[in-house]
Length: 172
Ligand SMILES: Nc1ncnc2c1ncn2[C@@H]1O[C@H](COP(=O)(O)OP(=O)(O)OP(=O)(O)O)[C@@H](O)[C@H]1O
Ligand SMILES: [Mg+2]
Image (tube, rainbow, N blue to C red; front, side, top):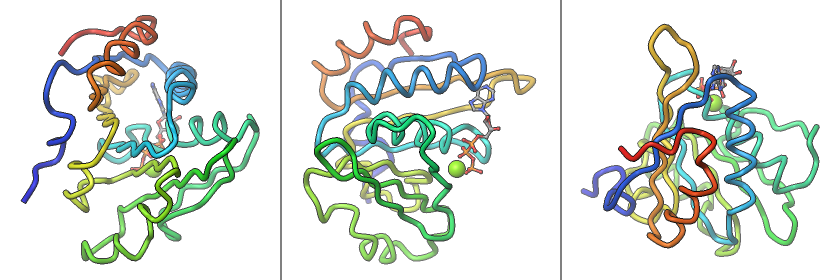
């Protein structure tokens, strides 16, 4: 059974400190600009860590509509958006009880789709093919968020670590 983060575990992660929601959104917009067709992005972290905030900001960037309604797909499990040139899927696997339910969501049906997944630990196989893995943690005293971003491709990791310098970029 693959462990979560297998595909992206090697090498140095990018450490980020996001002091408030505005920083989470700014970071997400920077990341969105670097995403490529076919990317699978896993968003993990406890309840309230900011996974949906990141996904919402990325979807809005990719669609090009800053005010787009991006509800949490907690009940529908996956919601599609028309990005510029490719499909964007936002999934939330929190309610998944059987890993086979994930297959039915069709997350890998369109190889060009950019796929964002909250609660990816529900299906450990996702980690084996993830391109980016963001682990959000609530900072002590609930002030801000401390995150680790792992990037499967070392070249992309290097490029992203430069672009994300404003958000801490601590090697972890
Ligand atoms: N860097 C930050 N500092 C402080 N609060 C933040 C930060 N980023 C996001 N938040 C806030 O955290 C709260 C929870 O965010 P969000 O709903 O995105 O979490 P989630 O991880 O998706 O939770 P769930 O697992 O319940 O779906 C929101 O009120 C959001 O504004
Ligand atoms: Mg959420």
